[in-house]
Length: 319
Image 1 (spheres, rainbow, N blue to C red):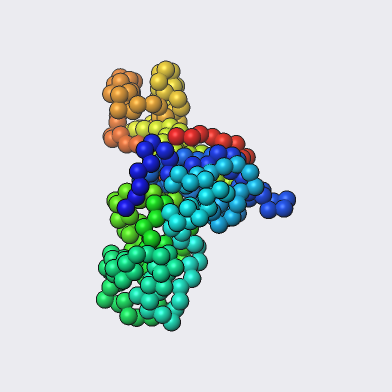
Image 2 (image 1 turned 30 degrees about the horizontal axis):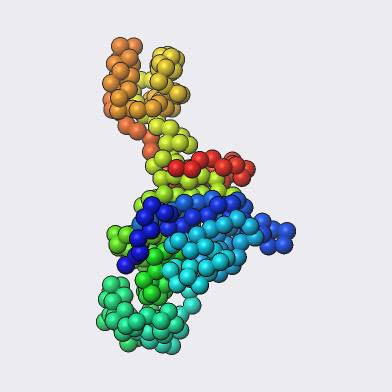
């Protein structure tokens, strides 16, 4: 399905910048995405996500900087890049009067697919649309049309797939259909870049996340971003909370912060698995009655909002 590129990244950029007159849409973007990774690109409207995808798909040229996709250089080998990428735009156009089979057949011919009927059948069956292949696409639900549009982007077996808002404007059932299909593609080892506003979706599907606001603010796994921004917070549920417990645990060298919230003691620290037994003993010796212990779970939304609202274009981390 994909060619071997050794240890070279499948998508690479260094200082990639795009400026439209006085507007800088993307500034100094440096990325390295290995083969087989599902990478999520998150950011508010106008952050430069779509511009980034258009540059990496060789549809528009960068103002400065460099990029390679599937081993080919943007701006020098654009034809080879386009042959090796599949692109789902935010509003993919399909010929609504044509059947699903004819739609895919038309685009497969444009892609110069060797065996058009076999390739069209493969993806219609994979998507569960084979029995409806003769129906006009205009009669399809939004979810079915979106899956068909993803299939169109895959007909020529691209090494890299760019998906711009793949579940935008879809109802929950249709969104689930599309997410399941993306998960199948991930299982095949495809390299996929997803632009989305759906943070829960990105958390579930993506190996790593990049948060973009014209400049790249942070890159890492969702789990690492949560820990980096907030650390790990253990919650001790107490029969009765005493202010003295805060000063007690704050005196321990491995505790970063401690605070009381009603009958809960929130303690931020590294390595809770290793430190919790000693922490529990210290609290019990001080007279605390611990009912149970849990961990405060930060969401990707917490990380995203904190970065976008409070980081003024500064690069935070690269994992």
